[in-house]
Image 1 (cartoon, rainbow, N blue to C red):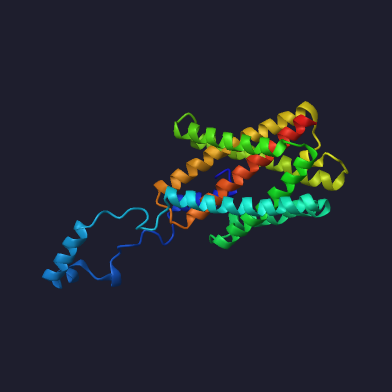
Image 2: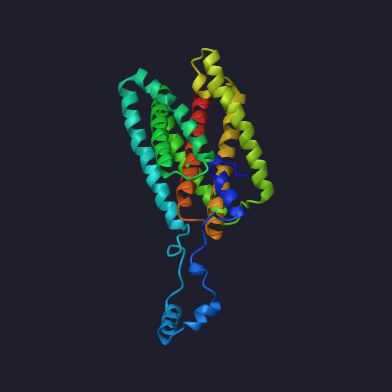
Length: 285
């Protein structure tokens, strides 16, 4: 099981074989090889020779995921997040009440995430819609944090870029090795933290009025330690995402899965950024 729920279907399909994939080159019409040999002509032999002379088909020719696909889809989704994030930031800066309303975009974002993770078929429009809603949430919450703790947004953004780069280099150099045991441990930790975050950031704010509900009800040194744990957990989850991308390419996943891989990577990056925001805000408190 992948720690990123967006990858659960991809991992399942990789184990069982991608349905409907790899059928190219099948014998059309169930024609027997004997029948084919009986109808062989000089022309068909020449065509066969021509096929042998052609270069080998690459992943693009056979409709498989490539690294270029994942990079391009990731950049496209990230552009949507940034674009709608900038718009939400502007709206929140002009109207604080409307900005607070936009931070509630976490609700449809959460719902869309569940649908994408558990829907039987991959839906690109849902992934695009998630990026749009995610951008609205990130922009609004970032403006709220920046208004209250000036300077935390650029610091969190820089820390996110630095951490992403560091984790990528550590994974590619072999410094971090993703094994089955490592994957299971991280997955269990993510599930545990998700339950804690749901209570600390969503349930308690509905029950208790607090001016610090955005960064949780655990403050001081314990709160900072919690944020450091969350940042570390999001960071190692990036390694699992990189591993899933490599595995999808190695197992010949259909090209459409590049959307799911890009979506999962963006989800983790945004999570890491939000945790950095909370960490630096708690340090200011």
